Length: 582
Figure (tube, rainbow, N blue to C red):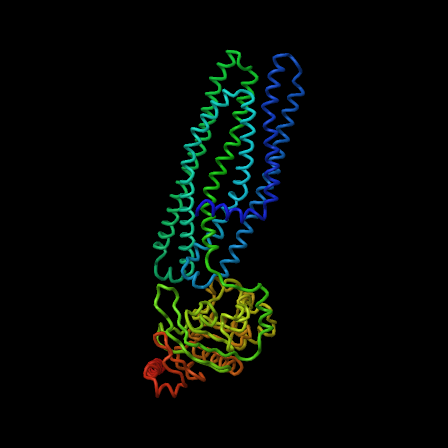
């Protein structure tokens, strides 16, 4: 990112906390001011030693300055650290909310593990640059200027020697800083790759083990870790070089000031106490210079994180209502079955990909069951994605209740729909949490009723903790058929007006499939049910069948009508008859 955009993004994170940051900076500056008084007190102490005056008061003052300065700076550091954590919390809250509203197309072309690393790892780097870096730059800069002024008042010649060394070495340090940013950005990208690789492995853990792929996957993760290590070490190398340059500048300055200052004391140009105070100021200069170098270094590290966070923030999101709007929309939406119409719909996932739909037309009045059949890749599942507005139609219109889905408030549209995906995902957590996921306000009586309809009541009874039983990552402790029944029960508990079933009974045994078919048939008397089906037993129950091929609707009718009139449907039906008889 250009520096201007980086600063604008940084200020956006920094702005809500600017009051607390200002307080921390103020306390830090007071602590620094007490430090500036110490060399002057030391000069007075040396002068009194030469005149046999009492030094008790000076020693007490020095002690008080040290204690007071340390206490004030400690409070300032706490304020800044607390504010830094608040910055991270706010950034994570905003980023999480945005990522969960991403359009499905954005998620499908982005690695989930990389997105997760932006929430965890990148926001952690953000904490330093938005508070410590800003305050260190401000307080370090002011303290540096104040120290330089004090040193100039004591002896301009020695100040010139000091500044000459600092400018020379500072120029070399400035060349190192961009390399820190580059190495840090690459290291963070590698961390995202680690997250992506681990998410892929744990997402198909049984397949990984059954395939004997542990070593290969471990090697892939280790390669990403090695890449992160390499870039991290490179960043550490450049940062170490920068800090070493600071130490070198101070040491060379000390030697130069000691040599030239000693000569000036010998010539009577300055007093011994002035040289002592100047050397103390020189040592004190280490702190503001270190702060400035640290601030620039932290900025280089943080700017890489800010760029990655900004990239995530630019991903396209859905326009959604308030979080509570879904329930309000459900209660306000009309009752009864919904109608669905596709009017000359065309669609492709991206501009560089071919069309999936080529003028799809059909009309489904409610209630009743409509089955979608056709070869793989015909565009059947995409129909559901367009109804749910996971994707926007490229051309034509998708209508629900005669209203273009783009005109529906998203929460209102989706509150009227129950959707069971092809792989029937179950989330980590308890069985009860999964059932209530889409209808958190459902009553116990409604849950028991749905469990019985989905043939899950016997499953719940045999589980050790009933609905409180943890189902494991992606429902790993449930069978495939049980996961499908959970997904169906979850959709029914939502009390939808439109139920979308994408091959929702494919993993059920014959007994449970027959029972669920009866449930779906019963539901379809009151609700519009759309089913993507591959089993003939499901298709024959439908009131109408939509045959799709190559992104078009080629025929609509009943099973008997299509067997007689459509060769493709006749071929599909015959194949399934054979599969059923086998």
